[in-house]
Length: 594
Figure 1 (cartoon, rainbow, N blue to C red):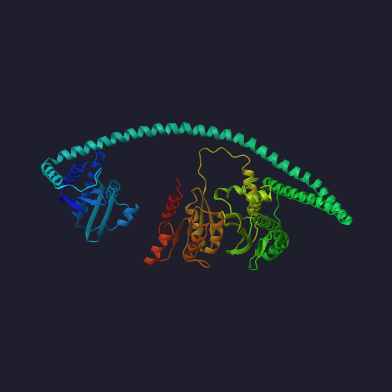
Figure 2 (tube, rainbow, N blue to C red):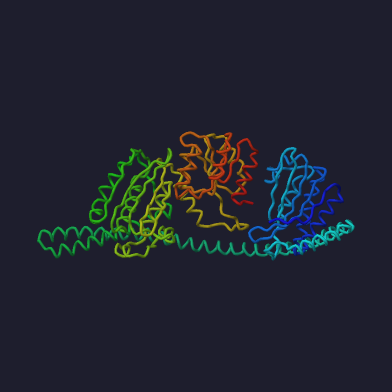
């Protein structure tokens, strides 16, 4: 339901002032507070002035509408001018006019609750603004309408100069308020400076504590390394002597003694495994572990695992160990460490599965990476435990875990080894349905990750106190087959706090995205092997990448239906022919960088 209140023409500067005055008075009669009256009057004044300046006149209509038990003050400003040709650029803030065109338009939009524009070249412009009437849910009665109309007739003969005086008073009040805000900001800045000095002092203290903690950590690592070596000798002796006792017991036919010796051997081997894990972790933390790349195939790894794990799988009569078919792939990395990681993952899966199966599979990702997965139908892991299981000595509380025993060192060691090989180890799990552990590593070990791992370990020894509280570094992945474009994007954000990775096509980009986990992906549309459409579709289908925002950067002339689809599945589309500063600012704004 719409009720018309008043209509006024704009033919001169005086009419602009009168339109503002009428808007204020109507807002007052509708029980808006003083601040809202000023906002309404200012919005009308700006649009009425635009109509007079650019269209040489127009019409302002004031109405009241009732929409779903909400009463709204509706103002329509019309003109028959040339229309607004740069509307889209005005709305996104990229249009700059010497006459200031667009500033008043967008300012009016911010002052009102709802704002719609209809315009066309030589068709004029119609702007509809709405603001919800406070504390009112029913339309105006005939009596109220009459009172408002009568009041407006009384006011129509008043001097517009008074309205100008009122505007000047408002400006003075605003200036005073801004001055007060400025004083408050200066005081706040002084307080922040004091706080910053305190933070710097705290960082200096933390730096000192870090040295103490690092010294303790180094001592712990050294102790573990020394002690695990010392443990190995007596353990090997116990194991050797136990083997002799076992052979003697079998020769004498003593079943009871054979049983007792087997208990000793089992406990010794368990202790030996724990010592080996401790030693490996200590070596990694000390940066002393070596990666020894050799050339081998996936078949070599699977055959080794099949032989190693079959006895353990046979012991679990209700659990089947399945190795899925795989493509023949050549690798050049540390075979022993790859096998060690998968052996631990399979062993854990068998221990935590009552019935069903444990499935081992492999998949090529792009040209340079391979993915190993160990999937079980076990008890699963709660979401809050999924990060903690990679911490040393942490174990999930459940019946199967209590039966299986363990030290909580296996998964932390697996993750450290995967990172050392240049990859990553992740988990997806649903309680009651099972878990999937996925290891993604490069097919060819480059050595860069070992250096990086050691450098990061060294960097943690004595962190420098920063001059200010710096934010965490953002990560950006650029996927484009054109090297010059990738260089241009990297150069555009070179001064921002961003870590940039590059990929030549969608296939390689998807492989990197799964372990790099960027905060934003900038992707081209037309590429070999896997284009932008395929990349977006695949990334949306995988849990590891589906929540990573994608920004499309393309030179393709998009059809309307293509653009509509891409704007729905991405976080924006930017043409390569546009100013590079727009891409930079879009990335900066999206990553919330200063």
